[in-house]
Image (cartoon, rainbow, N blue to C red; front, side):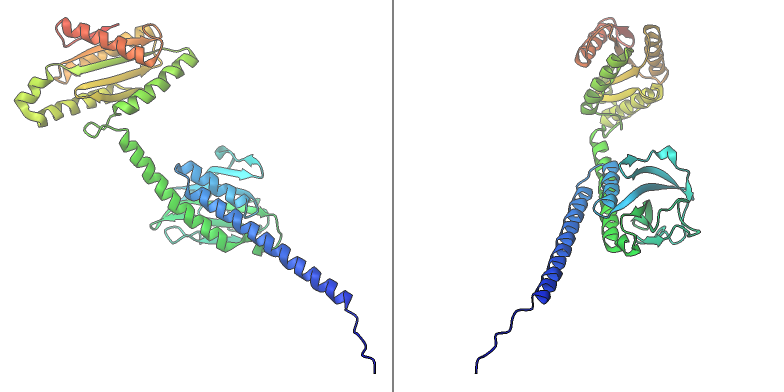
Length: 342
């Protein structure tokens, strides 16, 4: 008896192959999504500036999460103010949106929370919600650092909101914001003189160059004054270092009160200080330096000041300081406790 060989079921094989291909495509898509999420998390965690953290977070809501619009809000009193946002490829300007009230259940003072809603919710943060929206909080030790609103997801299914990745993004972003604020504080302290709180020499040099270049670009003038305390060694010898520190603190306070918004004030070293009055004409420069010298004397301080004007006396920051130093030496040679221009 001859055994009949069963022919393969080609239709069944085709169906099985098609199902396998679909599974493989889904796996590839999932892997691609996870890879994009990992890159987004790394970008957020690696950001040092608060603005960079938020920019990376908003970008992550678009890719890989797939939302069309993402907006960052900061809390101010009982309302939220727009600070940054993206809508497709368009940047959302802060002034384009009105402040909004805190939505119910938004997690103020709680652990990071996520509110999911629809366009017809009475509590929707924006009146033009595009389909399913997400409103997620950035929290830090029971305090709200900010909120992110996202909508316009590329898939109509509300499950496309992907709550677990959103929670991951918000948690990492909150930690990155804490780190960025601490880094900013550390960097600011590194630029400050520990005794007076004024800018230190390194910070002064960098900002003076920027100021001079800004004046050159805008074709304006600035005046730089270098000053030191007359006979400071004798003050230390008689009153000790505590007495000398008190004098330096008094000089710093007087300079800070004399400075206007946008001016530079700092301590170069020892008893030597620097102040830059920006956006001044020659006549105003002489008035400001004369007034500063008078304020120092009125405070019971004996100081010598040398001043130079950009671009009249020098063409760059280093030359401006040297010109002011020469004027300072001239005041010292003439009897101290006064001022002179280069």
